[in-house]
Length: 278
Ligand code: OGA
Ligand code: MN
Image 1: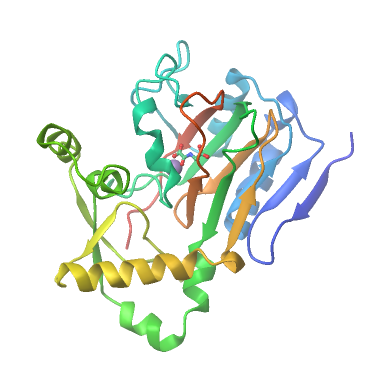
Image 2 (image 1 turned 90 degrees about the vertical axis):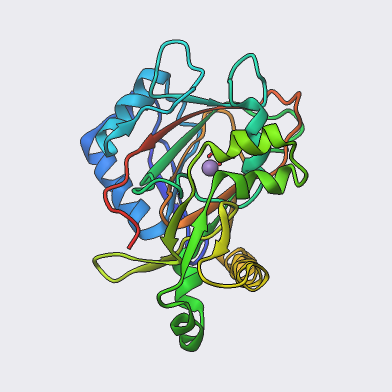
């Protein structure tokens, strides 16, 4: 089948058709994928239908695969099952957290570089799309004066901040469980060695260090609203077998809500980051 490559929005996303199964597990394909991720943030392989072994093999060609705790997969510790069905994942109860814009691993010193998600089973009702917002593009489009105002600001990221969006009134037990995940302060603007910059914001961003809580929250809310305008976003409508990868260091993402009883099942792998936020 002929391979087609289509850019999806002016700033974000590439869709590739005509590549599936073990044809993806190829050095040259992985190199092109990496380049497309750097340039466009999100890469979609339509109906790629990778089996679990090929998902892991393709991931390994792209970077260092990190084992995901409590992945729920019976035979592949590298794969995490993303679902609301508690019989398939011990983390099912936390999935509502992904309905809010976020970046994975912001409380890690070195956040994951790339996330890969492949659709094993899509929702019957057409819900559960995934949206992305390009924070490289969002930062670049800020007026220079506002960019300067963000210089040097630091943000406290925590699992608790993201869970508060789902459960605003936690019991002391819930709160204590969240707080077992240590918070981490990170720069608000992430500057890469090559000079590119992105915003490290989203659900885990609780407050701006050294600012009154309300003032910090207002700034974080304003930046999130700015970055998730339609002009910086991309919506992926899943088909069974799709493989979607994103540059987790600059792409906010969220799942559009899907129900507790939804059949939606994604298999995910993650690639280790190569640089701390700076
Ligand atoms: C995740 C995530 C989005 C989705 O697994 O970290 O954000 O659409 N998933 O399931
Ligand atoms: Mn995520």
